[in-house]
Image (tube, rainbow, N blue to C red; front, side, top):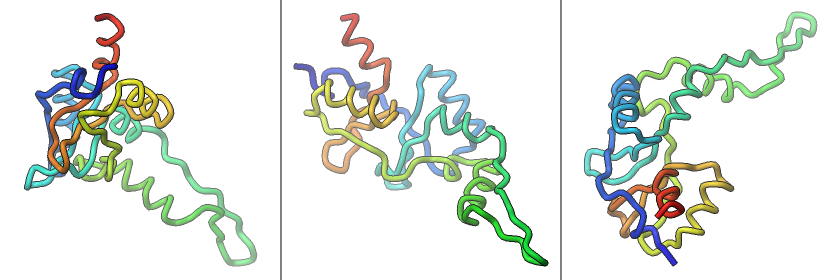
Length: 149
């Protein structure tokens, strides 16, 4: 049975929170990858950002439904959700869009478990950790290679 260490890419491209979204798009496009880990100044993993995060940034803004009763306007959705929507559409750096506390695996995680995580959680970029140290990354293409090998 193959494990994460057998299929992971060890040449891990990372970005920081301050990386512009334009620079991120260039990195993803030029390297033909779906996503990258986000690391802090100390090099520790703090999140992941993917193509889907960039694409989601440009989706239409959802305007909440409101009800007017007398002179009051009542929003039928939470103001936090609206605040999150405004943050998304105005994003300029990785910090505005990345997923914090990403799902990770260790080097001994079986490939079938990784495939299950990807399909059930719809996560296609998974950092591989050795304790708190980032040692690799697994994307969809890495799993596809196991089928063709």
